[in-house]
Length: 88
Image (cartoon, rainbow, N blue to C red; front, side, top):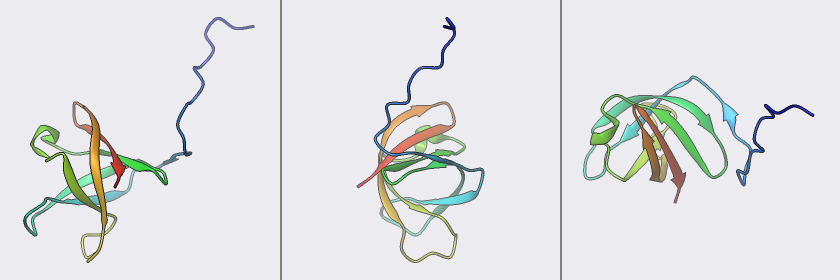
């Protein structure tokens, strides 16, 4: 048995890795911020965005800049430029 075993993934839903361009629509307006989708699941997303500390705790996630509808999310964690958010 190896001492360097990878910890078991305890996520409720499997995640799909990605490096696709995506968008964040800030609440109260039509302003869009570009981001990079890191991974996606049925429960939420992980994105990379510049100045992540300036993103409000609730926003709309868009897979395309031209999307009319998106998915509302709530931030669960921030680490540098990365944000983990759950769908609400």
